[in-house]
Amino acid sequence: VFTPSVQTTGLVGLAVAENPHERLRILYTKILGVLQNIPKDAAYRKYTEQIVNQRFSLVQAETDVQKLQDKLNSGHIEEVIVQAENELSLARKMLQWKPWEPLVEEPPSDQWRWPI
Amino acid sequence: TVRPKNEVEHKQLCAFGEYVAEILPKYIQQVQVTCFNELELMIHPDGIIPVLTFLRDHTNAQFKSLADLTAVDVPSRQYRFEIVYNLLSLRFNSRIRVKTYTDELTPIDSAVSVHKAANWYEREVWDMYGVFFANHPDLRRILTDYGFEGHPFRKDFPLSGYVEV
Image (cartoon, rainbow over all chains, first blue to last red; front, side, top):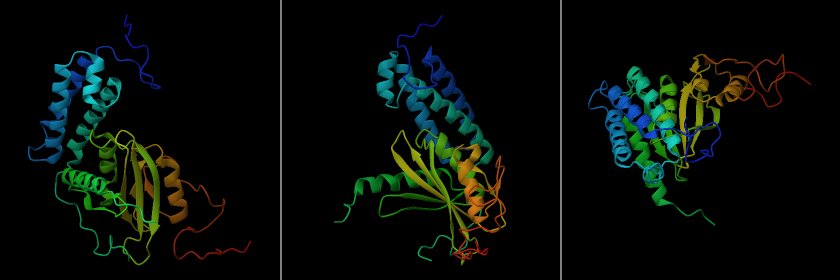
C-alpha cells in the first residue's frame, strides 16, 4: 500500500506518484529509443536528446524528490512525468510526420505581405 | 507616452522562433516577431496538426492553451482566408501566433484533436467565413439565424445583409 509522504499534489486530477524515479527512467529510455529511428542530422532529434539526457542525468543523480523538483525547476514531479509522456507521444508522431524534410510548398508571393 | 521597447524579450522570442523553424522546416514558411514582441509562425495548411501538436507537447514549448482561433479575409489574395491560432504557454508565460491560409473551397484540418477548445471557434469560422474544417466532430452554424444564407464576415457581404428585416 502506497502511503505518500506528501498528502496531495495540490493539483486537480494529478495523484501523487509512487516511485517517480523509476517511472521517469522508463519514459526517458523509451523516448531515447524512439529518437534513434529519426535521422541523426534532424534538429528535433538533436534538441530533444539534449533535453532528455539533461533531465535523465538529474533524475539519476538526485534521489530526494523535493530536491529533484527544485533542480528540474519545472513544477511538481508528477507534472514532469506528464510532460515526459507528452514528449514520448510527440516523438512517435514525429516519426510519421517527418518534419525535418524541406518545405512542402512555397506560399504565393503576396500571401504574407502586410500591408497588402 | 510610448511603450518602452523590451529588447531582452524581443531577442528571446527571435531565438525561440529560430529554434522552432529549425525543428519544423517542412511546414514553416516564415517567422516574424512584431515590434510589440509578438512571435508569429506562418505555416503551410498541411502542417496545422503537426505544428500545433509540437507546440503543445514539446518540453521547450508547452503551449497548452488555445487562446483564440480566428480568420482574416483578404479578398485580393489567391488564398483569401488567413486562419490564425493564438496559443499561450502557462509554464513559460509566453504567447505565440500560428497563421495558415486557405481559399473558399479547400478544407483545413480541424484542430479539435489537438485542442478541445477549438470546437466552437471553428464552428464560428465556418459560420462567419465559410472555411470548412475536415474531421470536425460537429460543424454547424453557431451565431447566424437558422435559415441564414451567406457568410457575414466576408468582405463581399454587405453591411445590412441581403434580407430586409
